[in-house]
Image 1 (tube, rainbow, N blue to C red):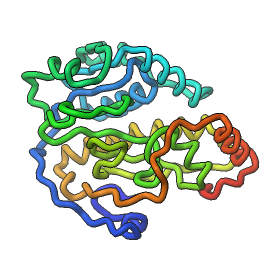
Image 2 (spheres, rainbow, N blue to C red):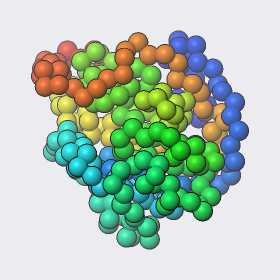
Image 3 (cartoon, helix red, strand yellow):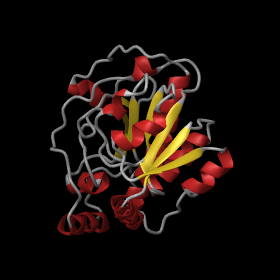
Length: 265
């Protein structure tokens, strides 16, 4: 998988070209970090980016019924795998201010960002966010998605990847008003071994998403975003929604029978 500016065969097939862009890039970015309260996806990503010294100015958590529902849903998806330390613990250890809001919408979030000269906003597991928040930071809003873009946009990417025999992986991209449609920064396939379960694949893409966000911030620090930013191109599939139980049954059966088309061996 390409990292710093090379176009992969997949990208060339889609006719993707490198897109020049202007950024105020030099050194570590000043950024805010948004996530659903104590979401395991966001906990892992925060641990990854902190490991390279990328410390957010503020963490803004959505504390809502949706956040609770999404957290429990995701915990079930990665059941049996380790979970990163809590946001509360990581924030305390690194002196990061944590703010809770009832929903990640501009009227609730923007008052907490006013006066901050932010380079970026990083999403670490949120619902779809649109509007003023996306336009606030100088160099954009970025997200890591647990699926390969543009082929697997939307929810439950590991499930739909197995179901449709799409390679499994993660992508880091800019956020626009679409769903997982913004320009790409990073994209990498995950290793899929025979005998892995659906829960293993969900965990694999969770960790990889955090790693790619860390590497994207390292590329920002090194001034390499203009080299690596490129449009996604068009995917063959529509934007996916949550996988119903009948789809998950097919996914688990394919993994048991080892008939998924993209094993690494």
